Picture 1 (cartoon, protein in one colour):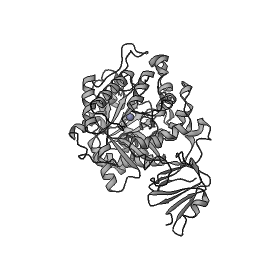
Picture 2 (cartoon, protein in one colour):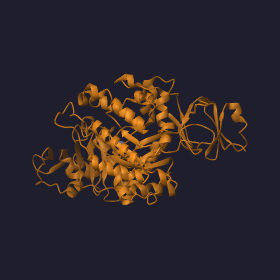
Picture 3 (cartoon, rainbow, N blue to C red):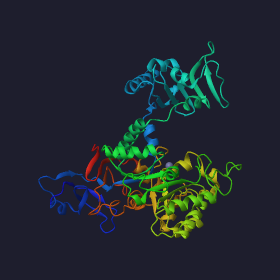
Picture 4 (cartoon, helix red, strand yellow):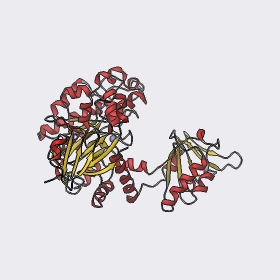
Length: 526
Ligand SMILES: [Zn+2]
């Protein structure tokens, strides 16, 4: 009856209100068997027990990311990162290194270069890239994202020659003497090459997803709500699991177009850790505030000509929602603007009227532009709000939410404290790769927001978003979300205690160890 693994001498934040803190945890197989003092846990230690002395480090329940695009993140990770490159020569070295690893013909994509940093003091050109990769097409984006350099192979595939005219809003840079394209494409001209790059193969997506999962456990995350973009990704999740390459737990959220393919049947998908009955389905009601495509009731304050973009009429949305509701899918509604949120709530109200259901756990993703009326309706419906707190920072600093929405609407942008005070379950996610992956950076953003600081929340409330509440969202509150006897041994070991760390430093706390089902899947103790 001894434990397989014992964590001792720790600062254990359990998120279990009946025993909020502890020193040690005993684990047998994939479950927690005891949480308590070092002395209590010592009774569980036998000859075969693996003991990890935490030396005072903090342990929290395995963190859960409720909103992550693993496919896109993986794609991004397979790009060459050129942010720290100081010469064209170094850039060539990295291209050569990549070209050696991949089959002939596969695209090499990179980003982050800046000619101002180059020792050569000039822009790179197609010749530089050809020297490093004659057989694989190459496209490398400047750090601004609106300029790129490509090689001959890429120009050839895109059909860009001496004769090709620059598209409107873009420039194909040409040699002053020969008239040949130099390889530098600006603004809309970058699309000429970008659009010829084929969709990645299943093998490539799988490589990317595998890499992404590694990064995710390094960030202390033990479970994810994987927002799937294609049916290929679903089979990739299944394959990764079958080949034992998934170091974490997955709750799958599928797009509506796959819902159509399944004819409303869950068993055709049967993926991830989801049981048949709780598969999430994501419905996009509008776009984003950043692109001014989030649907607002009144025009954008910084562009009176637009109110954003709805993807459905109310009637279409009602029909879609009721169909998914009756088929017992779990609705995950992407709605950012107040118009989209209003329509979402109306559709859910109607569906629940038609076929009442208590514990539906439907959620609104982002739910950016709220107001007091919406908050009451969300509360009444028992919906959850899924927020990516790093967006709170981006949307007030990268561009000005106050300019975009006016101060009255901006006041109700991600009102986390009000939502929590009203008893609405708020869950946390990253929206990676659009925003950084780290849940600790997300917690920091929620705790120290500078804009409308009256909506700051406590570290405990922020941790709850990434633990107990997120577990509830996937119907797994009995097995995840807190460090409790009988629950899965999913734990994250941190270099510091976020509750006693100055808010501005929470994001700097290091993940020292990630444990999933009693197995250490990531470890970096120094
Ligand atoms: Zn997203």
